[in-house]
Image (cartoon, rainbow, N blue to C red; front, side, top):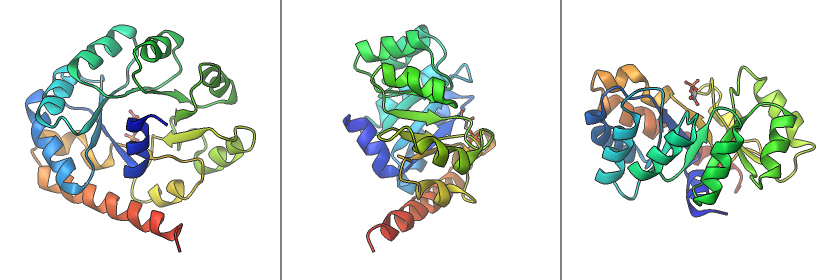
Length: 216
Ligand code: 3PG
């Protein structure tokens, strides 16, 4: 397994970030690390994404800074040159997948149906983003998908928070969960980095509790 993918699995949670001002990126990175999650998926939903990736990756080179909501090859190229260590896409886009594979850049494309999973499997990808998790049927759907797709793991994202994180993490096919609940846009904009650190630490604690259950 790729090292970045492996580390994400160990962390258990991928904070999904939409940041308006790249100047906030280093402080956000600091808060996430202080909370115990040296990882961020910075989404191309805002114009600041590329510079925020660069700012966070430069300040904290050991952090797993990735790019999310990547819709085009151009965005993937910009993300990589800004220092992104992984790419996340909301849907399956063959051109973006091929580009990432040819640059040895880990990519987790979004899938929601068996047909999309087949497309990803045909590219040799076995770790996929299940998106939008809750709207697509959540845990019930993931369990059903786990039947035919043995060996495929997922990062469910969309509608996940402290209320359901544990239930997802207990599923054997779940590698980690993604979500914006601990890095809400408003918290970043208002400089609530202590609160982000607290929410992050709470998520990390939950992951540790769940993972601890498996070793009893
Ligand atoms: C994403 O971009 O992956 C999702 O919008 C994150 O979903 P959430 O905001 O429901 O956590």
